[in-house]
Image 1 (cartoon, one colour):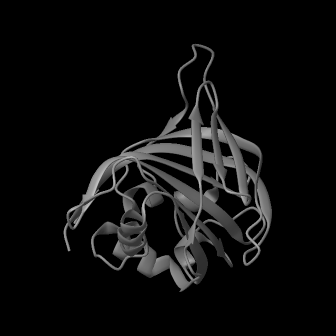
Image 2: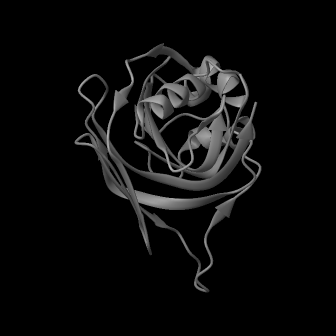
Image 3: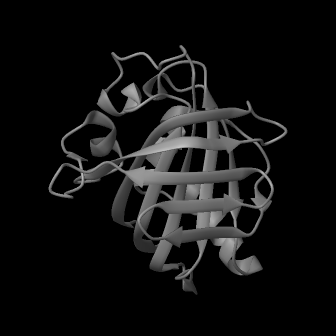
Length: 198
């Protein structure tokens, strides 16, 4: 069960800027609960010999409180070929070990059936994500007067995901409408790069 992937990771959730869950288990989400989504744009990768480069995965989940408190209910949306989706579902649900097995095993207790879906990501001054008919999100990175992005390092959730730095973004107007999960809109967003293996 060997796998390796690298690419971009984009997170947005129901909180205002910046989602308190990034800072650790002692914080409380803005509304007491947290609904969030993480999109993974895989630039290159292989899972047990299956090339997954160019594939995309989106995790959407509800938590009754802080992310670190667990008890989440989640679903994976996957694009790509049948064999790619099969392998990606196994990795991102934690079935193939490594970092994601530890993280997902700790925070998700109920997995809804994974769904195939077209996942579109467009980059420019803003970053836009569309997942079938259930998600439309736009993230605008925060910048200072010199045009440099606002970044955060060393947060508890970054450590959990083995991420070195993240760009903070506004996701105002973004929303999810999965029929089996809480419908939500929010303004918190973050952008990362990842390089994982097991």
